[in-house]
Length: 144
Image 1 (spheres, helix red, strand yellow):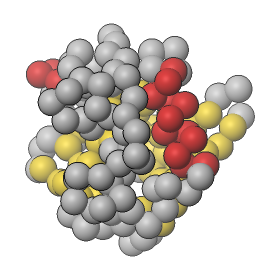
Image 2 (cartoon, helix red, strand yellow):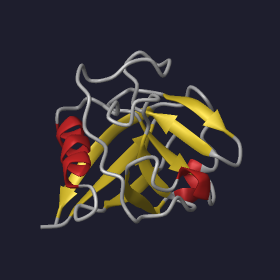
Image 3 (tube, one colour):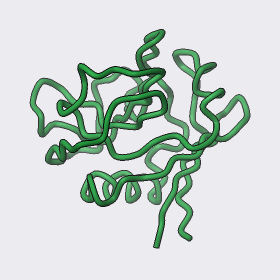
C-alpha cells in the first residue's frame, strides 16, 4: 500500500508528498501517525529561508517544539534537491520529532546529515510562495 500526504494551505492550494518508506521507514511512520492524529492541522511554517528551505511542524510556532518525543535518524542515499522533504533536528542527529522542511533547490551539504523521507510531487509552485507564518489547514494521508 502506497501512502501519500496532502498538505492543504490556509491561503488555498494543496501540496502533495510521496514518501520513501524503504529509505526511512520509521520516519515515514512517524509523519503519517502525526498527520492522522491531526497534529499538523493549523500549524505554521515558522522558518522560511530564501533559496534554501521552508520549515514547519512545530506546535509552538517557533521552531522549539515537537511531539514530546524524538526519533532516531535514518540517514539514507536520497539527495537534497528541489522538493525534497526531510526532518529538521537539533545538533543531535537523533533529535527529530515533528518538524520537517522542504528544499527550494539543491542543498548537497545536507546530504547524509538529515533524514530525507519524501518529496513534493505536486504543488511546488505553492511551496515557492509560502511566507513565514503561513499555516497548514491540514495534512491528510491517502492510501492507494
